[in-house]
Length: 240
Image (cartoon, rainbow, N blue to C red; front, side, top):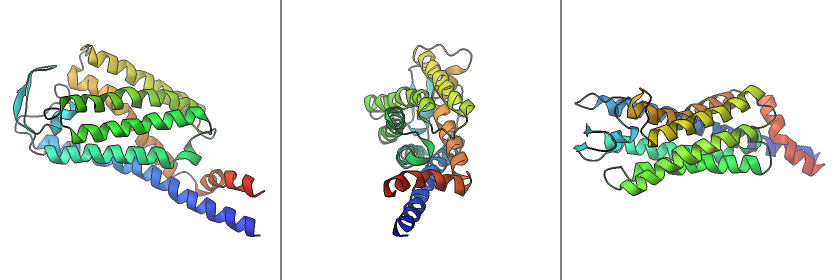
């Protein structure tokens, strides 16, 4: 009887923790796109998803930027955008940490995937704390964490997701990561394939965010009974 009560309490606590993780992903991605829209709308010269990098919205000074493509940058709401980068990074890492029992298999593969996804979160924090025109090296390091570590994390995640995740979604996750890695290679080699510099950067950076949003929504609205069954399995085996 005591063991059963313990299992129920642990399962309920696990459900809350997991829901916080899924919610962190949803809130992080949604606030990023909302603030992205607000920041780009503040530009006197129209901001272009094809010609401008995402990080142009966070540049602290108005100036002509010659590399990698010439463009004039003046972002009045750069502070707001950099705050969105930091918030997104923190919430991505929180989600990776708290969704362990429900979304992921046990074992090394899932642990590596979650670590790499959390690394992408660290990258967004670095990018927000160091705008490209203030500390370029730190900003580039953050971008590498996002588009290299994060996308490799997506590829690995396809093999580390829990058994209840449909096979098509597991394979789709790895395929999405592989496509984003390819886009990252094209971006750094300046082969934009008609998408423009900003378009190819988005093809490399945004798949991770779309995946986190989709995983968060699917997990948060998954039937409570199935989630409880997942979270209760491990403590139940210990009590037995």
